[in-house]
Length: 193
Image (cartoon, rainbow, N blue to C red):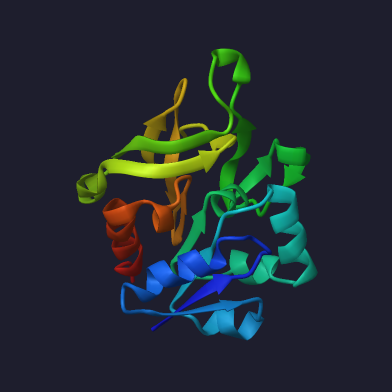
């Protein structure tokens, strides 16, 4: 089995690759349509802005390929944001896989923006409750809690820490930076068939 990590120009590609390889899985960093189509799992990693990630996906003609994938796809942080309809970050049109908009945290709520550090995540489905733990976040933008919410966290107000629609999963936290909790979450993703 191969995990294709889509090179969207982000800075955390190697750390995601190492985290997957520690799970005894082959992981390649690629922009190649064939690599992405043939892989058993696909990851959209998450450092950068929604606009820069969408521009990279568009310039490499990957948007329709990704939207039509039937294998498990994981979007991390910005990689999760681009699964939605739109992001307030630079008013960016995203891939429209999951309904809803990505919003900016309100700094008027006496929150430090971005949220940086560990936060408690509560999974909502019985089969994922074992993943409840503290995960590492680095985000200024978030998804509200929708019908596709897989897990929630709180930062000034509740928000979606993870989402799932069909074979597409998004996590607002960084599993590759979340120690043993992140390993368990990646094991969960890699066990989906």
